[in-house]
Length: 408
Image (cartoon, rainbow, N blue to C red; front, side, top):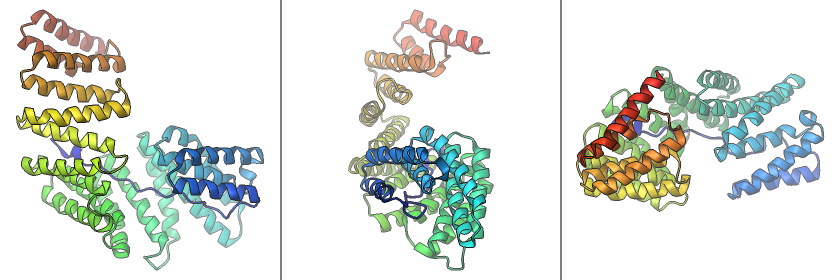
């Protein structure tokens, strides 16, 4: 098991109207309603109203309309908050173009400064989307431009909100480098962000996020002692600022559990995974995190030969994943296969065979009949050999060889 356990944390900018309120009373009221809906968690309603606002302003003159950019900003932010990157991308690109055009039009010094800051904000949104597409070179260029603009506008007071926003953007840039495996580039950027936030905020969730991300780098580099200290500092920041039951505490505990696995401290890892899962279980909307944590717990128990103990968390994880993603999702295939391996180890060969066959069927539905899918076929073939069904096992292994040859 490796540092792949660690979760990378991104910092987001909250929804806020980036320009003065609408010139027209109706538009102003609608903008305020969008922000109110979003702030109270009525995100679907906020999205619908933001779309309506955008289309009205597009019809009224597009980017020449006073508040067209404001409508774009709000809709992009709402879509990003829901993970709707595909829908947000063209709007985000349009938002950057509108902000560039606006900057070229203004002449007053104060207006230029505001236009530059709003351009930087739009670049940050687009950079996030490009990272999600794994278009890292473009994401880096956008982040660099965003950060250069913000750095040039910083004042002397490092507790000013502009400095805190700047640190957030540094974290997001460093996260791209970390995702690319460029730890040498990521580490000093994370450290600059950490210095700003620690000096301004003390033990704060944003400080915990930077510490978590630095810990992940240390873990990936194999410096487990440094990683442990950083994760523990991150955990302390989250607990002090958010309380013991916050989901961010659960994420950090899960990362510490993964580190304990890497260090061979399996009893500690089990305890940490269990504590993490309990936090997610008691926090609304955290079923996905709980499912991942239970899966990791089950895999840990399986690798220690604790097959009977491993079965329940793997079954629970699979049920949650199926409920969230549907019966035919690739993650369901993976969870089904993990459970099948435990059933096989328990000697429940008939049940294991049926479970392997379900996993293989889901994989075929997603990848196609001609995909080599060696892992699923090999696992089932191994079980069939144990059962003495050599003909069926041979057929599966021949399928693997055939499809591998076809794939070149």
